[in-house]
Length: 103
Image 1 (cartoon, rainbow, N blue to C red):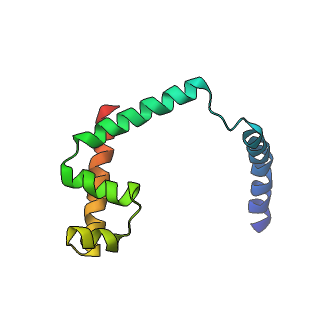
Image 2 (cartoon, rainbow, N blue to C red):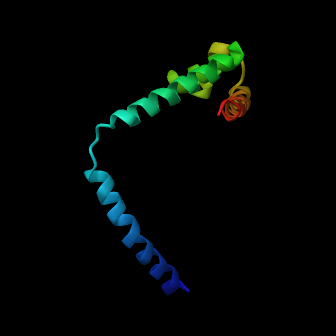
């Protein structure tokens, strides 16, 4: 059984290794089309975030833009770390649904 899985890993690595080499040799500068697609994606995400309620936006901002811990966010908002964790979970769910509807 171990030989089978070892063989599968070796077989797959023949496919993955060249792909990784090609990616590493690719230009680090995105093409014009990639830049446009990224800007469109950023704009869509920004629009979706702006549709969220203020408290939800604030929570996402503190966590993902300010890179704060649950403890730090809890102190700012005056709530427990566990409450911050739950609110962030729900905020991500709402953002996910908003993004899905937008697409």
